[in-house]
Amino acid sequence: MAVKIKICGITSVADALTVSNSGADAIGLVFYPKSSRYLSIEQAVDICVALPPFISVVGLFLDASEREVNQVLAQVPLDILQFHGNESPEYCVNFSRPYIKAVGMLGLDDFDAYANQYSSCKAFLVDSHETGAAGGTGKTFDWKTLPVDYPKPIILAGGLNPDNIARAIQSTTVYAMDLSSGVETEAGIKSKAKITALMQEVKRVEHE
Image (cartoon, rainbow, N blue to C red):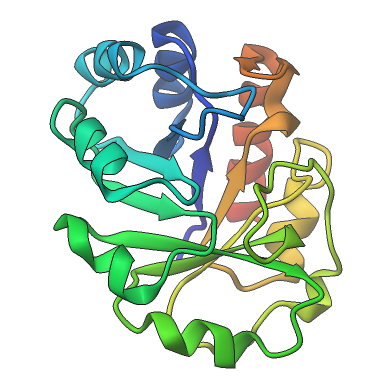
């Protein structure tokens, strides 16, 4: 099965269209105010209106209140929620949306024990930060520590870019790759050239 590609930290209609036109499968919108890729509800609505069909829109939250998440959902047609903080399994199921739970691999001793708590989630996003931290460090981690044969889809994040995406695909068996800083000119500003190069690498590996 071809690996799925999500580009996170989209902050403009132009970047959203660049990603969708590239052949990527999903975009990520960051609703964590301390992030340099944070965007307003109004910006998110404009992006969603401009997107063509069949592009999934993922909303990223970190320890937001239920009220804050519901404020976003009342106006932004998110397909999937992505929780990056210390959200409990009970909290994550409160929004009538499928969700992804981010797992910081730094210092995590037992992935299965952590993940098994979130039996209702659709997938786990594994990144190089500590569990419950914000992520987006732009750093890779040892892919040999990735969970193997876990029954839920695994999404790889952390330091991915056009130069290492082929190796990531070839050396792992994950469901999807999640990129942000690796395809940017600066935080929150995507590079069309890097996105194009990334997707060319993805397609090259798929056809080998």
